[in-house]
Image (tube, rainbow, N blue to C red; front, side, top):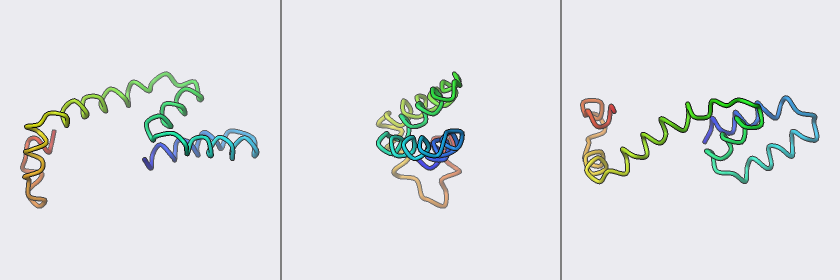
Length: 87
């Protein structure tokens, strides 16, 4: 969430003053992932797959009921001892 807003502001800094405000306002209506995709597209950078690929892997893993159950039962202080948490 935070990084997508920083990306949006960073890209907006390359625009004229009036366009900056509009770009940031329009970016606020998007989800963080949509905002990030828009900045990549608008800047002509075709490497968004480097972000969305690992995110897809994460979503696939976290959608597994067994994984979620194990994560829910991990003690906070011992979380790094869990292979599931580390993955």
